[in-house]
Image 1 (cartoon, rainbow, N blue to C red):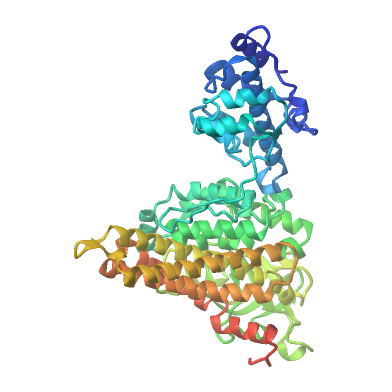
Image 2: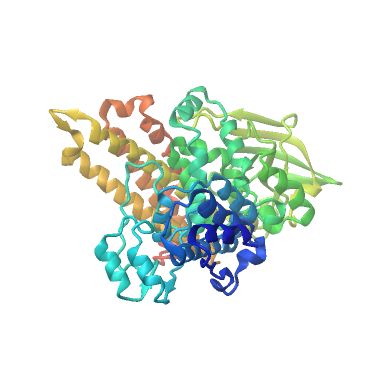
Length: 569
């Protein structure tokens, strides 16, 4: 299996060179079981036959270097396979892609010494060498650890040496001025999601979003790019093409999209696809899941969500739109308002009454959920002009005699309210991530501007009246982000998260608005200019203070459920 690698080692190290038994590196040795050693063989060939960048002297040195590299590749492959479904839908293919793009250079040994696989850049578990034969090689080899001083290497030669020791004190500096920086609290899957989405977003600069906003044009290119790699199904079951990741990963995705500079325009054009069809996943039948989920995940269909009515607002139980059964169809009559993306959507998820309010024992009864074609020959769709997010339309709907097939009803008739309640907390957490992302984007612009703008002979950021509000805004955003991730984690683990979902929705709306307002004021007149983008963020960030639930209703919920106060509405 490793013949060519063994041959190359023999040529480099002489006739006495020996190849370590890679099967002993890990009891499971799943690289060999899973991929028949093809990837390990290839990397060994690249490193030692073609490039040989490590150049450790002698057969023992080559054997140790090869063993270290083999361990890194194996552990990295195992880690790739053990990630959640969405990140290992084809682990061999993903590893193959990493291999094709890999070119050994001076960073290869540095990554190995830092405890990262040079191929995938994944962090590896610690490994300890006990053989005394290894120590002098490591102590003498400056090329294997090019940044290590002779003093460090001497210390390594005198004690049991761990290639990736546990570091008691680690340094992580968050940079508000960086474009989509990494976060130390993210796990591997969340970090991979952020890096992957950031790569997509980097192809759509802020100038793209400025043009989209000015032209009020749907960002179809961006939506197609996100759909191409299957990200629209990040929380959907894998059997329908989804990634089956958690709400935490989806929140990371939506924050990254908003933070990239696209703001709510970017996140809103994919938001409904991310979690909107959760009722179909949970309550729909198998035929419906196949019929509805696959085209949505592939980006072939877009959906909108219609619940709010002109005369009810947040009082969902008072909905008046009515669906009357007529054979194999329902006839729908009524109106909806604040329905986003109805100008471009092919499908609609709509909640209506099938039993009039006066004929039910409880107001939660008699509501039914449908997911069906948005037939504009039967539905009047009128766009509402608004202050921000011009590229993503918001509409009022009117229908009278709209015929919807019975087979498009989700679950049982009359159970619609509990279906939409299932996803409300998750939606609030997702939207909170988007709001925080916009806040970070605004602070990135303002921080860089304050450092570079010279007035009275010095940067304006040197004035505490400018620097302190920016610093305070970052503290508020960062604490909110951490609470959002905690709420998402709790939701993924099955906890009831109503209190936390409403808390982060409130905090995200308030603190993101403060960050954007601070950014505009810090930049002065330039903050008011469209070409500097922060005014767009300020116009859009008002949305999470108003919808899908107002900040006052968030506080009402917390006062009742957490503070044990009497209900006020």
